[in-house]
Image (cartoon, rainbow, N blue to C red; front, side):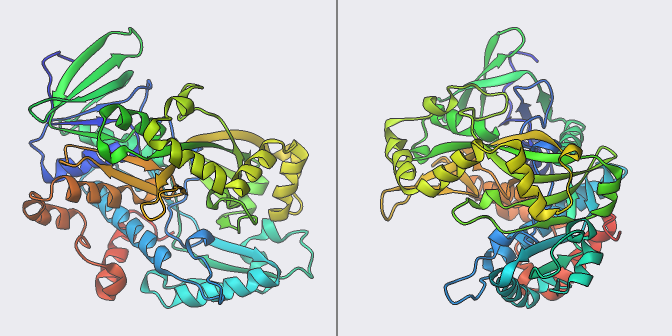
Length: 493
């Protein structure tokens, strides 16, 4: 890499967000020079890696935490509609890239897998009825099935119903429109495709510092992780898509918009089985309800995973704790992120989230047999010997100051932070993350380059036909894009 290289755009991190933004820039501004820096030896090694996430194409078909019930028992579908629509945007863009030759087979990264929400008990059944009623009225959730019949459920999810108490109250919804997504494979395909259009992708290169210069450009200090050699380059625009590494870099950049933000790292573990008998009996992704007092990210789910031709099941997550902000991070990441401007937010979260702290401590102290007991709530006949524990990705949940109260609030979504002049942006947080990457990066383009959007709109609408529209309000357009993406992505079964 020549020392004189000063690209128009620098993307920090080789994950799904940077890969998506690189692909979008090549659609709207193919003449721009773009460079990606990834600190690891390969791209997609952290949260985007296939074993570091559940692989769910998050579209709110099965995730019950996206459809909260109010005090009156009624379910608000608004968040579910938004997330489903965002996933439809992702599907459109992926279809556009597949048609353009990104991959010969979309099954390299996406596969149809039914999505189910599953509950037990009278309260759970009452909630599930209300949820189905609220969602079935939405065009985006057309075809969502509901049952509380054990015999029907034995056909849908035989592994979960075998050995279950026949007197237990059960209920579920099912959508055959669900998907399993290998975000690691997708990230690599996106970056390989972008590299073919001139994007420079450099691994083993860690961005150490970001400094704003008097002419408005950013000086980017990069270290070679193998040799320790440092160099600097200058760029007009920086995107920090470094997962858990985003917060420290945005703090180093010194932008006022990052003031008050903190991060709380949480690691996840899953039980995994590759038993052909078990996998063959469970061809679905099934999400349950989080325990009382547990955070939304702890929702138990049993997932069929299709990774590089191998089939397996994952059950979890089981929460863990590490002060690292990345799996390959450092033990001092959390304390080093504390600043005078975010100390109040972080202490406030510690005071107001005692149930979360209690939950994490309880999870950390769980024995293997106790974890197996949680699995048997989902799979009554599960044998401990069939399942091994794996550690998934490290997530840094966003801590944000509430402007109304001044207190710190722990958020479980993603947060786009944009510098005042639009020359720098970063993404913080986790789920639903990867599934909504295209929508997140479109929002970034709109916020950072508002004066260019009118000229870019035709190209964006060619790549994403629903751009500028609400699919939830235009059934004809929804039917069109759903049909087209199902065909191109081979999601018809």
